[in-house]
Image (tube, rainbow, N blue to C red; front, side, top):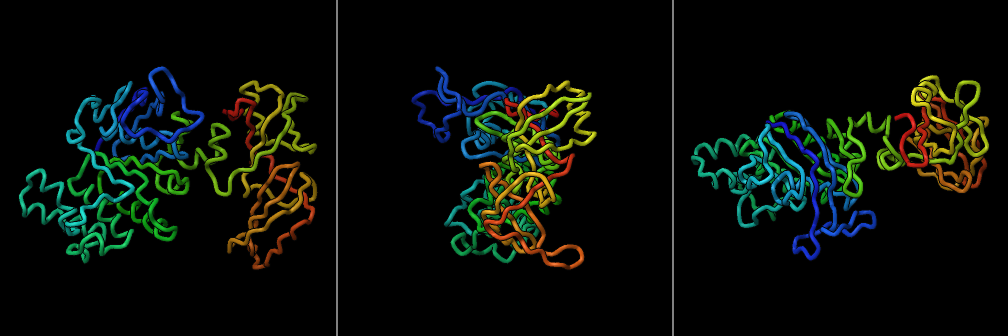
Length: 386
């Protein structure tokens, strides 16, 4: 159990460094010092909180995790654990455990030996090791595999062993670096549930790294969304879904991705109106008030609408159906709207049990959305409602 403070943390990989550098990204800042992988990272993490760092490859999330673990030197800024400055503390003195993407199990050891190894290094009494390993195995439901070697285990079982080895000594902080990325989709879904159950059984602060926004949304108390070394937004899963701070967050969070249209925000009669693809749209009182309190002027905007909030209408945006995807309980309909693609979702069966027949490919349809569900972004990409 621990609280952490990450203050203005920065990581620069010097020119000519022999350390592994982040994937080359066009938008990463390059200075005279070298490649800036993480910049101005500020985050307070409460005791027992589950924090998820999420973003595309090369955004700096794993580098941040490794700075917390002590596996990467902190170029600038400060890391505090329970109020103690940790910048120059050795990894072994930080009371942190880490679960790696590759499992990193010892192939010549049994499951029992792998889990108990951290305690053996600390010269813990054998009886105490046995008791603790058995407790952890029971929590993770791997008791029957204790005598097996890693090569005899499935991917999901190996990951449970790796987690068991990390939690056996009851660390203050548990770091997890894309632990499910090597598993197939069905097993990933199952292991997500197991991690949620695990979190309820152990008193530990979690920092979890993933590029999968579904994992972020289902696991995190709060999500830290990163891009090009910078934090884009911090919030609960619901907050970042309902109120994305900018275009990047809006497009990154949510499946299918949010639809974006070119629009014009108009000021008239003391209020606002919205024009999208030549169609006039209303705005809810809440959105009107949000824009007014910030004195937002009329301007060209990018209008974001989630696929679940877009649907067939009597009038609205003229669209042509291009692709329909049957997903079981719903159909994803891809349309062309003004030279851009838009996706809307409809259930295959309505609440009265009637089956929905999606429009045919090539068919012309009209699309509309409610007055309170769109998101408005200015030319700088920021949400105009704050």
